[in-house]
Image (cartoon, rainbow, N blue to C red):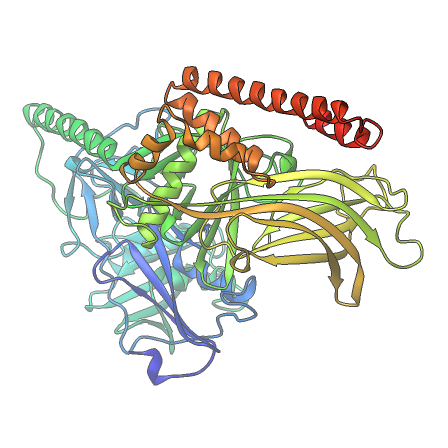
Length: 624
């Protein structure tokens, strides 16, 4: 492998996948070894770590100058290929004119226009980039022919003049009045181009040699466009930078195209409509779920919720578009590297929100919030995304029948701070799972201590969540939306909690300077496996038996779980339409219990021990 020859921390390279052409990778030598990061290409954009880029060089520049790709590590040393890259982009030429449909991402074009294929959307459409204007969009496949090996690589560019000789090119430049105007033409010698620039006293000529790279002077470039881009910012001769390309006198076709009869046009149109219909059917078959969701990327009052048309595909990718008719993706997620969890109402003061965390950048996580309009829509989307993510990551198997339930209820009771003056500022708590804030208490003014008695319930937690933290903040100004001052936090490890373990304790609030106070929490953690329904048939039959053994057993239980078990029994009987059996039995047990209490009181009265048993009788009456 190329990187194993370097073994220098910070070295990196970008490569294209052999098996999937629309996938790229950044291979990076970090302090932990060689790490690979996946880049997904879709409709002309590149996606990595939840961000969208227009080209691969933008990704490299971002992780060199603006962000770390691994915790505290950035891209430093590029590893060049052993030989120059061969431009394998497919170039196509329009065989007929076309006018775009309004409110679509189609491109209009004329016969002879040159485009570069960026991706194949389906059997009806290409996603392309125009050599003339640089625009990207959709074009019908049936109106193009492949000319990759038949025309010059620069054909169709606004600055490239095909089939003009030296004298004509010099005449065009001499007539141009704007200093810095330029054109490029092909030299009579193979693999040689000439850049002609309008100077102060006349045309300036520069020879460009094409070998493994493009050379202007002794400096190598990857393309002629890279040369032009460089000298638009840097002087090419005596403070002269490149300006605007000189327009062509007339549009000439790079190659001769056969004429198209009206009959052939109608035939091509009919074939295109059939392919379009087939492509729409295939697209619908690939979509698992689609609809409108609102998206927010940060917990801030300044960032607004923005609506997107969202599609969940069978390949576990989530695509965000501006609207239902749009083709270009604004955002893209691979659920294989994502975790999905509920968000409490208190976080944004609205319901039906879930958090999506993207782990595709290993130690560097990105996240976003998605919201639905209704509870029913929310449940469908949450289950669809969670199921697709678990299948993609291998957490569950396609035919897996059992299900793991992880629910957490945490109640923030009160807080007592240490030190002078700490109990006089308004305060609140933030509840986070694995470092992501999912709920918060109200801001309260302290008396002797801070009191909330606020309960938070998080259902269907993701299996990769490991910690819950409660952070305490004080707030100096209630009228401002700015965040509070961090005072301390407590962290509980979910793996250390057993299923149905009660949480009821005072915990120390820790910070960098030591213990700042204590916080009281109450709660319950549920972590259990639910088997298929058929595994519970025997148990169900025992519960629904007319003798109601379960009810008599429940009556003898004296622990705190009695109420929850009783509620579960009533719910089961209700779902099975057996409450007509349960209610008479409950009434009979209550009557029996009351009779026993009254009989005991009568015995005590007859024994003449009224004074001695007064408190006992009151206790029995209260229990009734």
